[in-house]
Image (cartoon, rainbow, N blue to C red; front, side, top):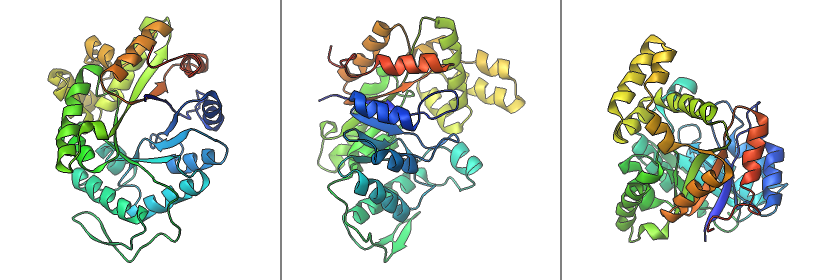
Length: 334
């Protein structure tokens, strides 16, 4: 069954916080997705705050960086949400980026693939009630155990864009989280990577839940939306990790030009480097029917769960986009 989620974004210029979460639960969204980073509310704390006031929606972190919490703290934070909303919490983990982890938080961004693997392995053991005895290359823990049992099951999702991380998700996780840097035409490739990893643990890609964050703006102002998303593209392109993805998507010249533009702080050069084609591939905007059609294409491509990330330059359009994807209005299978 296809799932529909709402990606919450509690920024000052939009109503994407606590009250929006309660609204989405009442409206029947299957999932609430909580971001972690960019100066927004901490995802785990936000999810715990929402847990006690909601009744049905699954609460998903998307994503919690593995560098900002050690596995024991990830486990205790997850336990806190699980006790308030048993069976409704999903843990999304990922490496994040050098810019966020090392520049913003001051934590060395080293061996991301190993760090994600080891964090996932240890957190699973802790969820199972085991006392820690783990010696990895990036993680160690001895003698720690949760004092309360996990009620039910907490699925673990791993975020991935490159082939190695997608394969790791297939091998270890219950689900994978894709974002808009895996556009529709690259979803089949991503699923092939996940399937390769899944085979290592005797599974196939069909055994995992595939979740995708999609940036959406329901609007009739084509040029404003295009420029907004072009700016968003450059935000991600400021980091080496995402420039690598941009290169793999077929835009090596754009990635290099963006890098050079940031070196000399030339905003016009950075913006000019972004191809229109890339923006159109990665972001969804237009009238309701256009946005509906493009979102349904993700389901048809093999995505099980779409997390709609409402975008806009104003609160009115943000609200309108959320409203447009109410389950009573939008049907994934239509």
